[in-house]
Length: 345
Image 1 (cartoon, rainbow, N blue to C red):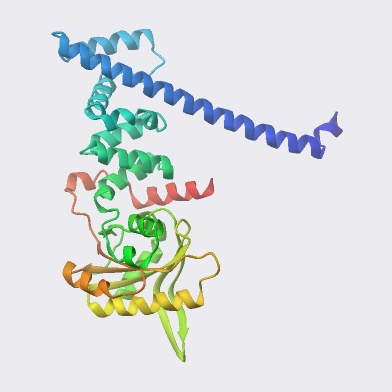
Image 2 (tube, rainbow, N blue to C red):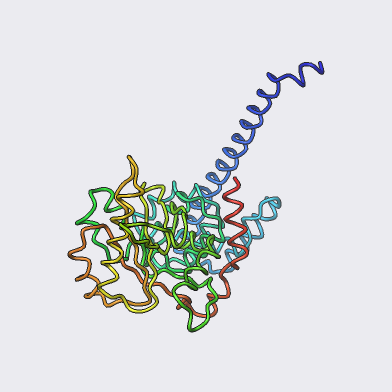
């Protein structure tokens, strides 16, 4: 018997069996969550209809909560507070046909995520954006809240760019969706008179938060990345590779207003990376110029004759959110631990 237990055949079979058990547990958890969300949708609909057609006020929810909790003491979803969430969640989505079509997707994310999305989103369109991104990127609740409160929906795809003229479809559309404006670097602690090099160093020192703000797909390659052209050495502020766009992304940082010559220099760096780093299968290198502020018309003029794909966006070091919302954001330490856990899976 001991020979069987210590055999290679048994070890391989045991590893496979454990993996199947874990997969089964995950499927069971997802199935339970899906059934629960479907139940909440039906319950929300019935609460809505009964409160419309009967003279039942908020006391009705209290009574319903007591009765359901008495019958199902092991279930935590029938508290008075959660029944209010269920009613609001149903009302929020049922107002539009798009919302009703979302139910299948809503059933794929935890109830806690659902509550955060409807509590913080202004429209069904915005809620759908966060639902789909949660499904695509596997956001935890803390990361989801951070993305909502940083206004990702309003910022994504807003950078000025020339992708329609410089990239083929669908690469141009994907590149446009990848960039945002503004970028929020509220996790940095910088002196009032900081330099571009200090900004760059601080971003790299907080690379976990920086990558979270840049978005999914960015892989960090280095700062002050050396490029030699002719007899001269040049240094790219920050260099990334985007795993979904399959291309290098050159990032240049500017402390002040955008100036037309900034686009020319970035164009030069993009050309150098295309020539020296790109291999077969790599798409055209993209440039991202981050500046403190920009005149939109000046930026559009500058981009109009640039031959390489490039985006221009502003960055902010602090949120413009109200103070009471800032307090609810997760700490940098929590985000870092969360991201590290995700990378370790």
